[in-house]
Length: 180
Image (cartoon, rainbow, N blue to C red; front, side, top):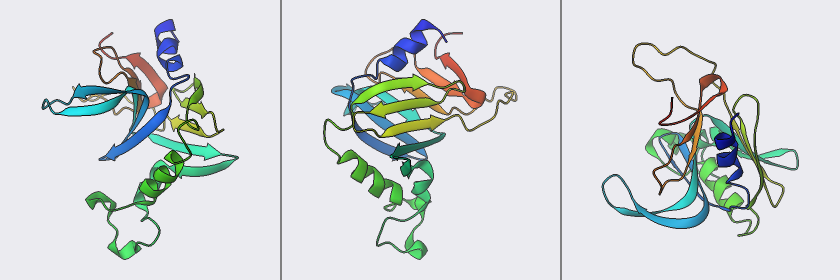
């Protein structure tokens, strides 16, 4: 692992997780100070200094128990019927409910104390309150067919800056976007 990769991972140390959103199976976590920027249509939006976008498996654990994980999006929140819940059409999921509870731990609870990277491209973020956010490179190494790019497991980047993104592809392959 090169110095720039470790520098990007270590940039999360001391930064607070303050928001998460999800769209079409992409979980988006915002870290650090709030930064004003514009989306691709030119509409103003607030993002974190750093963003972690996860399309692969992830979970948050505390005291040996899973508080919330990516598959919680497929279950309805408390008080909602399985019969009336369709995760593809929106609706409040157990994931939404659990992440709201997690983020309500307080401003200082989710400051990253230590960011580290596992052998297979798994990211581990230890927070001040002892909670741990883990990503998993859960797709085996595949050869792309034609021009089809492989799926990615996660990416870390500065949303308001035009800098390379740290990307993890199937098989735990890491690379910096924009570089060969």
